[in-house]
Length: 97
Image (cartoon, one colour):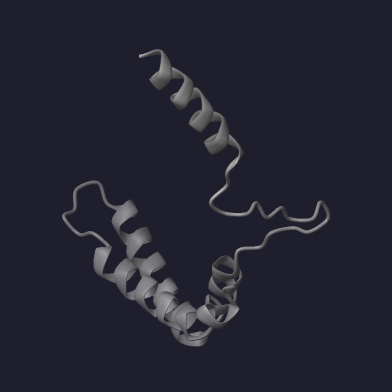
């Protein structure tokens, strides 16, 4: 038992100092920007995406103006998000490192 505890202590110290992956630190002045967020903003201005967003907002306003309704805007939301993501994917993967 004594030999095993010495062995575990030894390997524990070795494993603490062993790194599987090197640590990469961003420079202090370097601000990390999510390329997907930037592309979503840019694609949100595309005419087709903007039209689908407006359609979703109209639906949302209509639903919120009523007290009793079974209407949801899920279809409009999915259409908008699908088109937005479709636009983003055209250039997103070329910007990833």
